[in-house]
Image 1 (cartoon, rainbow, N blue to C red):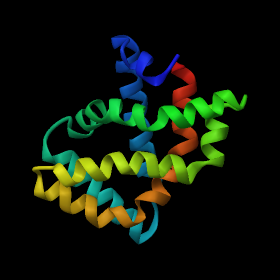
Image 2: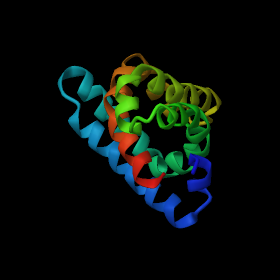
Image 3: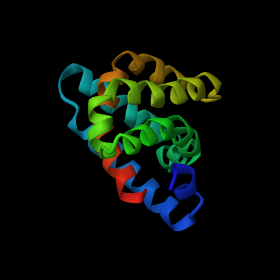
Length: 144
């Protein structure tokens, strides 16, 4: 079963969105130090743009993320590895696949404050995304 197959099931799609939003919240909450303050402030700004903004972004970007991640997930499966383990080992590749989607979307954003916050945080984003990759792999395993 591919990621796109899973996303075509509305009940699973809703659960995936919940799990991914929880992952994002948890990863933001883990941030520490000066960069953590910046990440938390940027996240709060983005959440304040309009109610449900983060959930809507996850819902909207999920199909693009699925396209970007499916070849990596398929490689893990073809090599007999768990997705979370494979993602952990290939965290930079997975993070770049995800960030290529968000980079493209940020460039197209009509929200100047969101665009500005994204560009300010983009420099540290790879490390933060890489830290979340194994947990994302677990979410993918759960549904595929």
